[in-house]
Image (cartoon, rainbow, N blue to C red; front, side, top):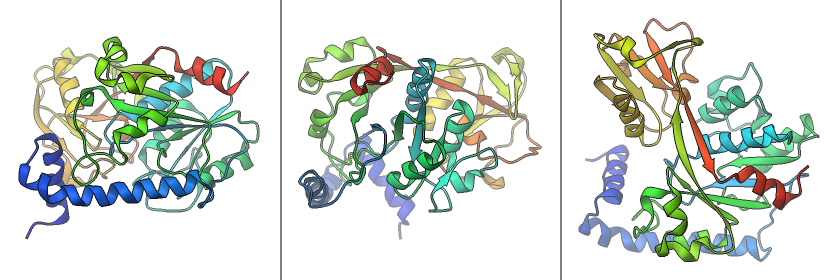
Length: 345
């Protein structure tokens, strides 16, 4: 009998390489999911379900896909841009994968099991107030109790969390999926129909280019909204927990190298290492947000990991671990647009 993990793998493969039998089987389930999602949103839009607001504007950086669109580096890029303009900004998140459901304002003593990997990584990278909670409303309220001077909150995901009122919605859409016919769960990777993009204030094509902003196939998405694209840049390799100790790919020639990643689309991380000239003898791909256990580590002289996975590791580590940092560049200036729309000074 196939376990749930095996079934999930089969369905995800169907999303990439269409299986006609599964398409017929799953299409009715997708229509049920679509009806439930539409009905829920309709109830919030018409006040039959209550949505609450926070004391300052909320910007949702969300997606209609199920994970893997590279959203967290974009959140970091937006926050950095707002910081440069002296805007007091905080981040709220559900903290996917954490062991607790308690509302928590992250500090220097917070454990990754309590916060989740991405919120803790954002806190350490950006040095801004970050809170997690079972609801983003609770996270925002907790953050304001400690930081009443915040001017804007960035919600990492939460496009479908309609219980929290939002002032701006930016949908992150992978450029690779432009023009594709995508269905809703479980027949496809979408949480809401593609038409949902029409109602957003902005659309950001992750790992896209300028041509995406003039694609006639999606002209209806682009009208009357901010449109942009992102590019990813990898920084210098650094030793785990020793960011001042950096290396170049040539330093690892002659070593048996491997990589491990528990992120959405780990193949992008492996490809980035190989593009740098690092020959990988083994690649270990784990589910997004999964912990790395002793049995997961590859047998190698040097192991490369992501910053997101480095957050989950405790000290000391007997293995020689190196981290490849990642930053996103957003074109054009989305922070300027956010400030203008929300009148932030």
